View (tube, rainbow, N blue to C red):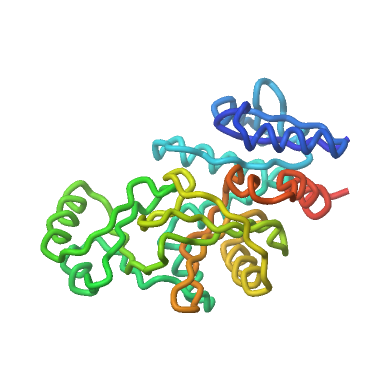
Length: 295
C-alpha cells in the first residue's frame, strides 16, 4: 500500500483537501498532519521522526510539503531540518528540502536563474543604502520586496530617489536586507505556469488593470492561458534550476521578452484550478507515485 503524507499548517485547507481527495481516488492511502505535530527522537541507535505517535520513516512512501508559513528562525530551522532527516531516512520529499531552501530565498533563486540564462529583472540586493540608490534608476520605478515572503505582501513601489533613500535607510535601521528590483511595466498582467515534473500542466494570466501587483491574493483575476512551448521551456527550466518537482513559476512579458520573477516551491493552485479542466492535484499525486516512490 502506497501511503502519501501531506505536511501542512492546516489539514483542512483547500490544497490539502484536494490532495487528499486525489490520493484516495487514485487508490492510495493518505496521511495529512500538521507541522506542529512533528517530533524527533534521537538515541544510541540513530533517530526517528514522529507525528502523533506515528513513525513517519516507517509509515510514509512519500511526503508532499505545503507552505511552512510565517516562522521564527528556530521554527524554520527545525521544520527544514526535520524534512532533511526524513529524506535521509529514504522518504521522498516533494519538494526536496534543498529546493525549498533555495526557492524561499528570492536573492539566491534569482541569481541562479540569471546565471543559467533565464531573463530576470535587474536587481540589487544589499545592506548598503548608498549602493542601492546609486545603482538603480528611478525613472521606471523600483520594487522593494522582502527577501522572504509571498502573495505580494510587504512589497511596494518607489519612484522618487530622495523618498526612496529615506525609506531604505529606515529598513536598514530595522536590520532588513534591501531587495530591490527595477519595475517592469507589465500592464497589470502576468503569467503563472504550474510545473509538475517535465510539464506545465496548466497556466493562467493574472490581471489587475491599474495595479502593478498581480497576485490573486491581492485581487487579480485569473484568466485561462494556452500553454505554449515557450512558456513550458522557460518554466520547466526555471523549476529545474531551483530543484523543484512541483512549482509555480511567475513570468511577465515586456516588449516581447519574458522575464521570470519568482519560482514558488509550495504553490497554491486554487486560482489556476478555476480556469482549467485539468485536475492539478491528481497530476501532482500521479507524478509522485510514478517518479518519486521506489517500488
